[in-house]
Image (cartoon, rainbow, N blue to C red; front, side, top):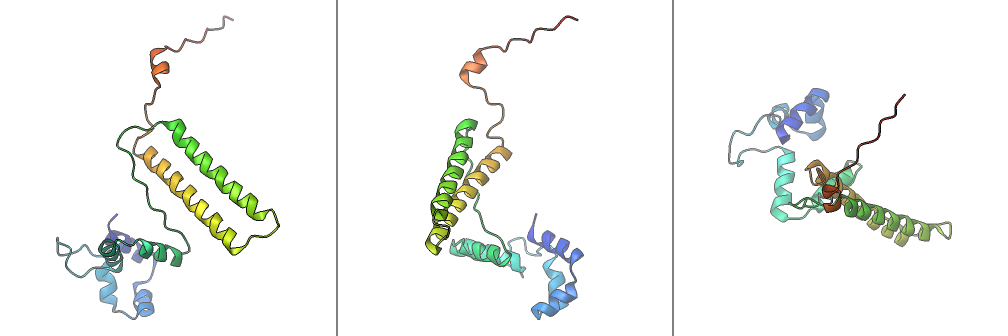
Length: 168
């Protein structure tokens, strides 16, 4: 979805007048944000979403995305690159299970004394971010077909026997 399409959808649910008033901007500018860019090169007037994208690209600093997500009450998780070749499903799932077990270990160690210090919370957060990234990578790979039509060499070579029919 393009940024102007998202903003057009937002304006269907939110008053453009209210946005203009809240942001101390003209109503026409708010509506202009929901229009496709007139300059194909992208050098024309851009909406705030396009500017955020440009800022991230220009600086190469994803902390901008982290900040926006935090202001929206969430977290930014970068999509890990999906390997071009098919991946083995079991090792991929094992990685997520291992990361989850590590997170539980950190939580367990931190809560052993019935409290969680700021340093322990920071450690829990770091493990949680690792788990979210690994899981997002798994889901992203699955969506791109990395785990489809897998057969091990042994199962491909060995035919599956038909189940015997019961005679009644």
